[in-house]
Length: 187
Image (cartoon, rainbow, N blue to C red; front, top):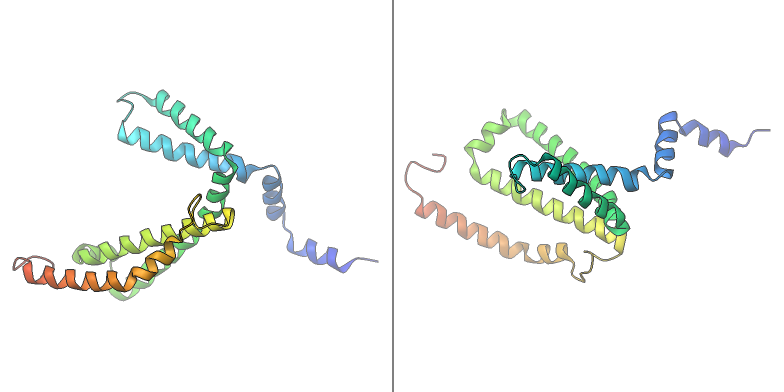
């Protein structure tokens, strides 16, 4: 006699989900992926900024390796990254879908952003707020507090000040349109 729960469990399990589960059991997503991510980011920043000198690829790699190793040794920090990255991935998919929809209605999105500087500024502010929100969600999930070592709910503070920010932005727009030079600013 066949157990029905076993059949259902095997019907949903695929070789890929089994492989992912094996990697998860080995700690691949807890150690290896955060290590590679931090190493790549630190190495890229050091190479691009040339903080350690013009021809310091080996030194950049050593510093990036050390920082990535220290990073992965801290379980709470890797836990935050493990929770943070899927949220950022979801936000990225939502932004790309929004850009596709906007391009259906307005054509070339890059041209739209080039012609409307305020749209670029608003988009950057929204993206920064989304990243702050994602970080807040990730740290809350791992530590139970909104930010590691802080008792303050950042998103609650941001949304309590939103009306004041909207009024200040409206006043700023009025001042901009009064003081701008004729013939500039998208006219």
